[in-house]
Length: 404
Image (cartoon, rainbow, N blue to C red):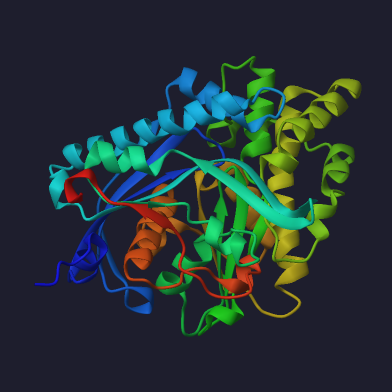
């Protein structure tokens, strides 16, 4: 009698229940979604059963932020936090399944993106080895052991091994769920970092344009935290920015960064638009005696302008844009949405929820879909987005403890 592997058993199921976990650049919470998936690739049929967002306790969030900064990060901290976050992610899975009145032993897979703590999208040379690199933590062995469920993670690494930048990953989800036979669509995410997927009508994977446009909420959040002495972590509904006046000199200086004019594929993160970048914003504001509200307004305008500039430089010379769908925390910032609609003029701008998936759940849904593709042994990187030499199966896995 042939004994089937855990993944083979999962692969043979008509419907698979999968939990997706995402901890984004802002590191404010873990998004967790429980979905049912039939098929894979272009035949994917997806049903969301439950979605929750689990905020990090303030102390844990501070410890995560220590890892982002080479001045405060250590090998010991990274090693320890890898397992701490694995436990926190496992708690999120258990809470989600229990709160949705389901059973852990009926869940087939967990897909966990992990928490990115460093990303190097351009090659560095060491001892004759020239390579890009990335690091996400939140040990999947801990998640698998704590939940008893086979867990898939490390989605970015195989793409980098194949010559890509390991990001963006979202274009695969956008392509299989949101391509349209007549309309040219932009799927714009505004998280800590903002990224887009452009899908021409009837797009093939080779037609996709996708890249990080620049800061999303990251600079806004950091400015809010600085001026509130840590009491505020974001500009709720864009209320502060709405009261401020954009400083054109500061905005012009920020927009001069070479990243914005660099042709895709390209990705970025805290390494470029984090602590040092924000320190320059604060220093300029201090030197020129800018009001707090004006600095927030300018940081918000930076997000809007870099998104619009990306469309104007890399999409509109070749295509008409019929629709834009906004996901991520930025979709809940009324000022970002108002200014973006004004900046894009005749292009229709909608919230992503209109497509049937809650905006906050999108990236968690992505990790569930990527886990499904891994189980089905199907490549899920988009070469046009990451720059990889070939299509590859993304992820590594650890069998659940109940399967060993």
